[in-house]
Image (cartoon, rainbow, N blue to C red; front, side):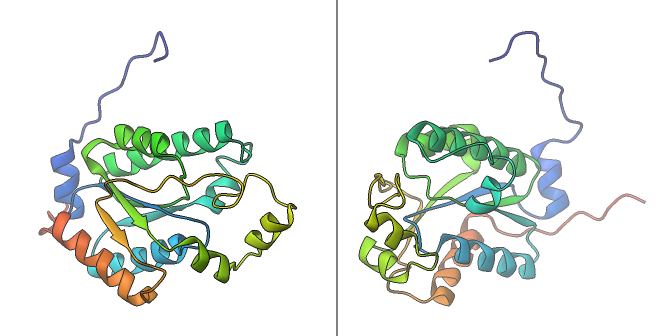
Length: 204
């Protein structure tokens, strides 16, 4: 904690934000191996939920590394800092009353636990659970091939570890089920845990 800082309270509380949006803020944290389908699922889920009336935004790994985290590499320390920053940003989205969908490998349990701590009860860990063989057979960016040849170091699943979630709130078998079926499971999970309520009309 930095010294000489004083938190400034907001004029709105969580209940008022939920009344405005029609749902509570949340972080849907999608974690899984490279090419497990996290980004595709996140973007499809954002579209599906928005169509139903939810207010959502996706934080995607590659997108964040092109901006906010452009100064970070893929060493264990940089990976941890990458997830630390994302966890803090996602917590702000949830506090604002939005549903923040994150798509990050986030390979280390300790880093995901720290993100959960930042987000509190708003955090929902979702394991996109395609197995390594399936992910490697997809290899849409050719990264597994580069990792196998030694051209790419510190690659999760090959030369760097992935620590599988032990108790995720939801596990999606993206290796054997279609994108549409996986999205349907995610939408059903959100409907159960973050049901839409009647939005309050804005004041004139």
